[in-house]
Image (cartoon, rainbow, N blue to C red; front, side, top):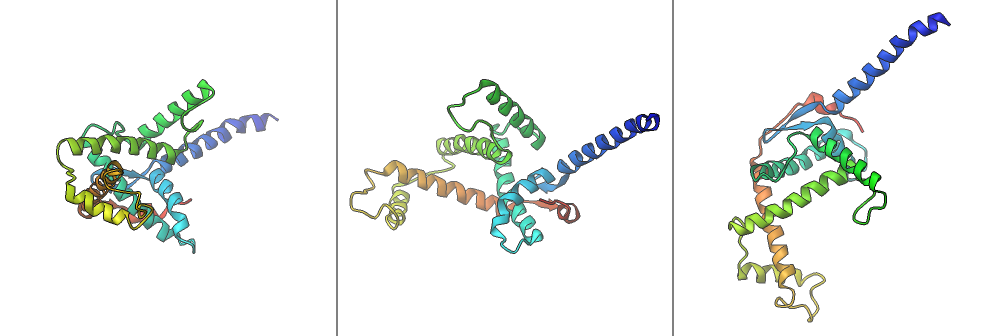
Length: 212
């Protein structure tokens, strides 16, 4: 019995060490995109989103899809940081905010807007999408995005090929929706251009260790 008690601190230390090591690996930096760190946790998040695209379960292909997704996301984070619209200096800071937000929502009880608690991916997308909405407004305001009448007409012709093909749909009646679609396209063009120029430094060995 005494021997068992003496062994307990060592066992406890081992458990704590393993737990800490797992945490370090989860938050380990596997590379940089546009100078922003990319953690193993973020790679895993995007791997979970990408795995349905890889029916054969090829993990190497899933990791590459995750990196491609992260390039798009990090380019936007960089842009948002430059506009003081992204408050998270690290991904750990975002996860801390997720924890605090979920704790506050649980303590409140009934939640009438949104889920009772956020998942990691849902919270990230929630923060990113809200910040991007403000960014688009700023881009319209300072003319980085400009929507002309010609843009509206061209976009409406494209939309007429879909659910807007009925006669009742006219540009005058649905100008707001068409304008929003033009803004989305212009913003996507900006991000695609930045993605093509993005500097990526991913450690292949560290990336290969990220598992689902």
